[in-house]
Image (tube, rainbow, N blue to C red; front, side, top):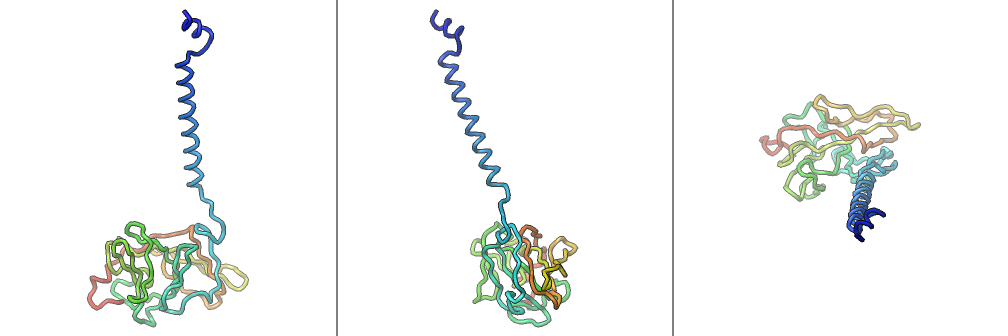
Length: 211
């Protein structure tokens, strides 16, 4: 009789606990969804990864010198030329003509996403996770990397910070190395605009190839 009266007057104790449990689950789900959306939404500002880095042209390394490291943007700046070859960079089979210009190379290995490094002793980029190796311009030397290193878009600016040139997209959708016009005073690296590297033959399989 008491239980019947309780049902007539309102919720039973069991129903009340079910509602509390359901509400708790719903609140937890809502909180987790909100946190996931907050985590996934881009929150980059200028000068941070995902933004644009404007740098004076004199910050570039010398031609065919070791790369310049920019950890805040997760890229390496390289300045290469197969016209002036050395132990770091020279013409190899499969290169599409002379390679002359600058590139901003993403600091993540194209195999499984490990962070690779430039190794001065061997004059190349090397991934510590699975042994992939790359030339100064990011071309694959040793697998298991499936392609060359990825690159970010570069824009060349004059003294007034007006655009005078930008990275060109190759037929395969990758960014080519960009020759800088003589009047270049600044370069802008757009880390929000990345293209996959080319899929070229491994340099280690080409006899007498360099480096």
